[in-house]
Each structure stands twice: as structure tokens, then as C-alpha cells.
Image (cartoon, rainbow, N blue to C red; front, top):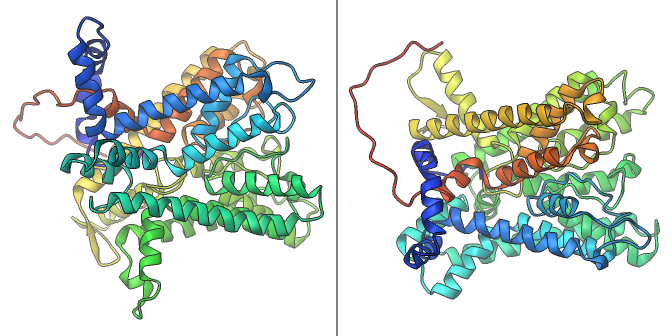
Length: 489
């Protein structure tokens, strides 16, 4: 994830030497190098996560390319479309090039659902259990790296933590399934209602955005229970497991819940509330004469609430995004970039990163040396990691946007009147693992789809994590020179 801790300071050095490491590892004349690499998988969770995601995507691609995964009378699924769909599902994004409900059979939809569950539950969580089951007791380094990947401070009780993640995920999805089944009962055949409720519950909690409808959830735009259930699942899944565990462990304490929460939980809860409010209000303002024109007050409130919840990382929609105003799309891009929380099922460069930078900026404007929040001081190393995370996200989005504009210069998508805005929206949606689209995904060329697939993988793992996964085990020596301060601002 973008919040992968403790690695930002060495990313540039490690990434610069990654190619040499890669060629040495896969040298067939050096079997000891392969042994060294496989042994390092247990020591470096970033490599575990990276290669496990690639493996899951490869298996998912093969399964989706099978004739059994295709709905009757539908054209065959190309290998490119199968790989794109598998990547989108495993990276819990939701961008699609083929209709999930029309082009895929129940078997194909089941494969997509399993990939969503693996990606949202956290292949890292499964990997953690495998380390314990296969390798016995993990080393101190293994525990420390895995703990940081899962977003916790303590490396103790990782087996119990992984089991708790399973319990939380399955419990939330079961509750969502039961509520959605009750809210939609009688609208379709019973088995179809049950399947749709299960699919959308998993997709919502995992912030995936896949829907068994070509128009996502537009048909339920006025259904208050369905909207609130989906929003609740998305928000809970996006807060992150550290926040959920922190809240549940202090619910029964007699003292004030807010006062006893960790600072990270307070940053996440306050930041989430502010972003939800900002997104809803901006949607109501900019779309008052657009998609909200003529809508009753209840629908206006519901559409704004659903938009601000899902645009941050979920990918569902109850309005067609191609018809939204340019101002709305631009603000949606900003919300998608921020995303959800560390250790969550969502993407983006994370709410806590945004809040850390906002707190540091506020302290600087007031002439203060330290960034304080909730009677705690944010360490400068955390501010540095937040800055590096945000800059890496922006840099990758910029490079991907230029590449997408270049490869699609002669494609059908480039003929759209708002092509630059649409392409920017698509890149941030993929990198933030959101899944919203203005409608250009299916019309992209093969290189364009490849760019988005890479962005989805980077967004799910985090570019910093990928750089670490492909880097040397030990960074190269870095000399320490005399300090000299440049002019900034």
C-alpha cells in the first residue's frame, strides 16, 4: 500500500539497482541465486505480496479465458480483456472492458468474486498465515515487516491478527449480505436476489466497485436502504483494520472513546468525515443544474451522499459520470487520489497521509516547528514519509497520463470533447483503485488497457512497495555530505 512504512528513504537507491538484482535472480546458471531469492520472500513481505498478486492475476486470467466463464451467445473473451478484468478484480478496482452481468457466466462471475475477496481481504493476510504454517515461527524481521505491511505497530500475535482480519471481513460482508437481501427481496427471483446481494456485499466492503448491472447501481439511485447499506460497507472497509481494531477494543471502556483512540484513528475518522462532507456539498453545488435538476430533495441528498462515499475508492455509481460537470469530475479526481486508509481495502495515497500533510502545512503557516494533532506530535519522519508517498503518487499519475495520451492519440477515446479530463479521470481512478469511469475504458487500445492494468497493480500494492519488492535486500552505500539548505517556496 501507499502507506508502506520505513522504506521511503531508500526507494530511489534500491529502485536504481533493481534491474541488476532481477537478472541475477533469474540466471539459470546460478541456482543459489534462486534459493537466495525464495528465502528472501519470507523475509520481505513486499516481495510476497507482489508475486502473490501477480500469481493470482495470472490464474484469474486463465480461468476467465475459459469458455465456461463466458455467457452463452457472447463473443469469446480475448486474453487482453481477461487479464484486464482479472487485474481489476484482484486489485479491487472495478474498471471493466466487458459487461460483468452480460458477458460472464455464473462461473465467470464467481471467479471475479473470488479475486475481489482475495484482493480485498488482503493476499498479505493469507501470506502471513502461510508464513506461519509453512515456515513455523516467523523471525523477528519477518514479524516486523509483515506488521508494517498490515498497518500495525506491534509485531506480536500476527497469527491472531490475521484471524481477526478474516473474522472482521466475513462478519461485515455477512451483515451486508443479509441487509441487502432483505432490502431487495421480491425484486427478482429469490436465487438471483441472494446472488446479487452476496456479490455486491463483498464488492462494496472490498471497495471493488464491480456490479451485476451494466449501469452499476443507477437502478437503485432512489432506494434509500440499498444506498445506505452500500455506503456503510464502503466506509467501514475504507477506514482500515487498524482503526476498526482500535475502535472495537475500546468500545466497552467507561472513559471517552475519542480520548482513548490512537492518533491515527483520530486522523482517519476526522479526515473521512471532512472529505465526505466536502464531496457531498461540492456535488450538490456543481450539479444543482445538472444531474440533480428536477430531483426531489431526498434524491438530491442520497445522490450526493452516495457520490462522495464511492468516489473516494469504491467505484459504484448511481449517476452516469460522463454526464457530470467538469468541476465535479475534477473534484472527484482529487477525492479519488486521496482514497481510503492504510491497512484497508481501498486505495489512493491515503487519508492519513493527506491529514498529516495538512497538519504539517498548518503548523508551518503558524510558524510552529512541530505538527501537533489531538495533543500528540507527529514525528518529522512520518511527515517525510507522507510527503514521499504523495509525491510518488503524483509522479506516477503524471507519467501514466502522458503515456495514455500518447498511445490513444489516434484512438476512439481521443475523439471525445473532454479527452484530457477523461484520461486524467481514468488514470487516477486506476491508480487509486477506484473503478469509476467516464465511459472510455472499453474503447481504449491494447496499450491503453495495459497502462491502466499496471496502474491498478501499482495502486493496490503501492509504488513504494513494488520498488522495494524488486530491489536488493541491502541498499547500496550512501555517503553523508555536509548539509546545505536550498531556498524553498
